[in-house]
Amino acid sequence: MINTFFKKSILAVMAVALMAAALPVTSVFAADDPSTAQISNEKLEKIWARELKVYERLGKAFDRSDAFTALIQARIDLARQNGKDVTSLQAALDAFAAATRKAHPLYESFKGIVNSHKGFDANGKVTDTSQAQGTVEAMRDALKQVKDAMGGTGRALRAAIKAFREANPHPREQTDPSTSG
Image 1 (cartoon, rainbow, N blue to C red):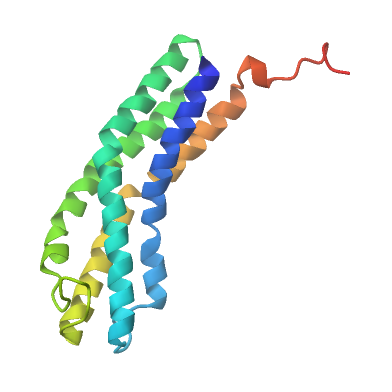
Image 2 (cartoon, rainbow, N blue to C red; image 1 turned 30 degrees about the vertical axis):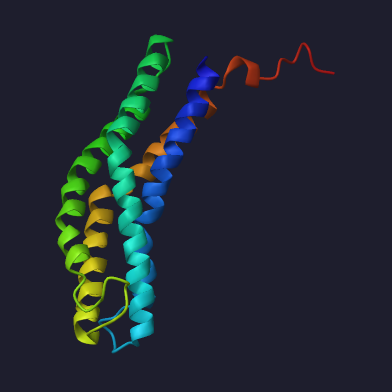
């Protein structure tokens, strides 16, 4: 039962990994920093397409965050009932939940950037280079704000779950020295 609990927990954490994977994308834009020089329309279109993909992934992650947090909380409660020390796991989940509550309104606030997509047409093609450059910069800054608000809590939660599993292996996963070789 505990083994199933942690397998499901790891799967759930993978959903968080998706969210965490989406957040570091702002560092990728450093190489494509539109503020450093005038860049081609093609490059702006590629950057905008990547930013939109990140925006969509974040939206899906935020949509699932309440259910994810509730699932992990239920697993922690079960482990606590089974006498396990879940202090660090609970702290990591609490930090993640708080960061999600802080980051979600930031995410919602930059829907206007996406909806107006100044300088881009509906297909993501540049119609005005200077406006497109401003839109890409605004989106990059907004994504960075979400990343900063999350503060690496998704990774910390994943690490806490991994450490808990290593400290509390399921009895079937342990090797019994009396039965081996």
